[in-house]
Length: 472
Image (tube, rainbow, N blue to C red):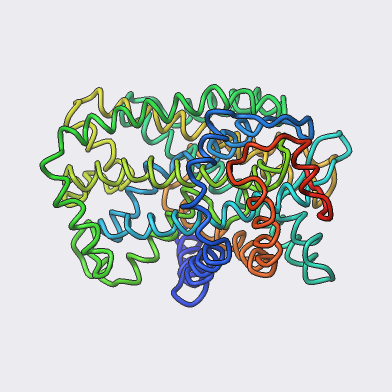
């Protein structure tokens, strides 16, 4: 086990090193931000209105509504990364890691828009009559020749692998640890219950997942945010110093344990970006799979709706968790049993006692459960691309069984495995986004020049799309 841990750590260090994925991830987000003329800032308001208020387009071209596609993607991202991932980043890299999570999120909104746009534009209909899309389709359709096909299969293989890491093992592991700490529930009991419930929902496919997440995810986020807001109000006097630490240590680095390991800038940057992408998945390409199933009148609209997912995940939920940990001071105290993820629980317990620990444990259980459902869908779409529809049900069975394993394996190995899988999954997608950035920018500009407020009907879109191919 120790050898496996050492191997995974060595690979993770290379993948998330200063000369590989970090510059590729941030650079892609920056280039897309510039080419799209800062779209994530210009159109955030209309995008939030379309996704959360209006919720649907007047079209039948898809399997689930735009709102359900958004909540399915949110289900896959608002999870353990928002609580345990943030705590781990701060524990290793110090408060400055939160700054780099913000940067990853802001630039990642452009990446999330681009991949969701492409997911709808190049989507297809599978043998069951359902919409299929995502990097495994738009990479080979948008980039002609063997290179595009190579990138598509690279993505599909590592998306399949990553679904068992970020979307399964880490989630179950965190739930089991928190429920044992808060309520004394044995890991194996959590594993059995979680496995059974996940299996029951997955049998219904994307439509059942979409229906479930559309009702469940907003409530889940709201409860956590309200609880966190109360703590931040109580910690108000400490907030100015908390922000000062975040911005100062973003460029110096101080770990929670105060040792040399967290003192280097590169470690702060690495933890911020790695945990940032773990949380919001911008640039990984995963959310494009859910976006492709949406009923939408145009790829631009769904791209903008999907973009709001990163805003909600990182700029809102991650920020609440990070500020709670830093302002409460628990990041300086370490943890009695060495598990950084319990820092969030300790911060809540400072103000709410045992009830606070229970809030975090229940939040993690719900967050993780929804993430497992969202990633199960991502994984099965990757399997479908690799081996066809016949591989979907065997995948669902295997995925469900792995939920139990995740509740019982060591925490460190789970996180190292997930970091490696996430990174290797993101690489082909980021390369594809850069290659297709010109197409994304051109078609986005044409659409928004004609429908800047995102209010055009399907018939009106047909009129101004004359001379341009309609993709919906």
